[in-house]
Length: 361
Ligand SMILES: Nc1ncnc2c1ncn2[C@@H]1O[C@H](COP(=O)(O)OP(=O)(O)O)[C@@H](O)[C@H]1O
Ligand SMILES: [Mg+2]
Image (tube, rainbow, N blue to C red; front, side, top):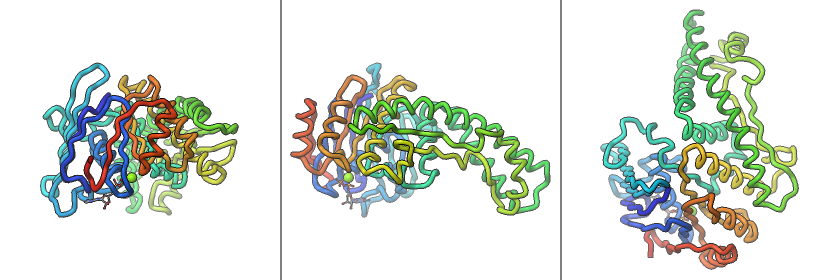
């Protein structure tokens, strides 16, 4: 899939821009605060109908304005043209349209216009709690499996109700109903997480090896209480504890995906460069998975390309993504000369946009 054109109106520091993009590599260069990441975030809005940072829509409206609008013209891998508009106003809320038609539910859009983002903010995947990793995998799997997404919604709704119930003195029957709902949804979620981690692991290993000259192996392990028992059994066994704690103390909302390097936790023992390489390998594996399942090449966004990487590794990354397996790429960097030098070293052709104060010069 190629994003041919994007129009951005009163979105963050971008007042009114229309960019015609290349099918290959597009580079956005400019000083800190110029608006490079904001351009990528506008693309993120077209794909996910929200900011890639956990900002509210309101915060994405240019200061002093009432609304923003982002419009993208896409060309699919089968050459079909499609248009996506994402608009938000403080009064009217958010509207997402595909080819002029508004969606009934935003969830229908999930996976339809795939993108993969590599950004300095990814480090939260390593440094933060398991919740961050669950969120990442939930988003990834939801894009390729609507049943997973539906199960997740059912699970979270049932979990909320059960937790509410635990604060009262519920009847056995009521609890059993929620236990059954949780258990059925958890079964789907557990199986899919297991499968996806198994599918993605060899890809991560392969990309990590290509990216780095490091000798050690990388690992990824899915940890779930459900690997030893069904959720039905677990819920029954922890019922007294749940009453005392007034919330559900077991289930797939406590799963983790443990990332490691040379058999040790990545967070504690990986150097910054190793951690960053791992994250890029994970994102490239995500790309490969999405491309295969959706039969559509995602747009790859590389924000702050040189973040924590030396030139040699960046060149290696560029050589890798310049190949046939990857499609359109959007890159940002604050140092134009460094980027140009590395791109030519990697033998890549590209289009350059100079960005300053929210404008393409
Ligand atoms: N809602 C907003 N209205 C106006 N400017 C904004 C808004 N949100 C962020 N900005 C501005 O956008 C700039 C940051 O842009 P960003 O794309 O992150 O820069 P960079 O080029 O370094 O990636 C900052 O100057 C910030 O003040
Ligand atoms: Mg930035």
